[in-house]
Length: 92
Image (tube, rainbow, N blue to C red; front, side, top):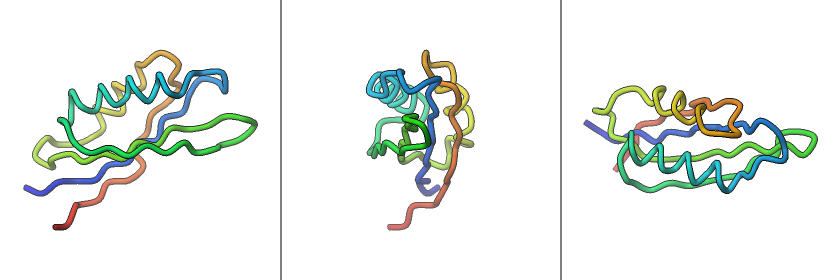
């Protein structure tokens, strides 16, 4: 099977949440469930000082749906929600 490029958008509970810590914990979760691979992180301003963390990572399609990854990221302290916003098949 091919690889998929997944984007997960993580919303913190408040603007005071340490986004670096959330990013680190989320990357650990992704590595556990999707396997080690390349990741890219973006911080996206939302509103009133609140920022979202977007992590783009590669996952083998054979592992199934990425939804369990988002569910597990939601359990990280300081995370309000995690949503899979994009899934694309990698070419090449």
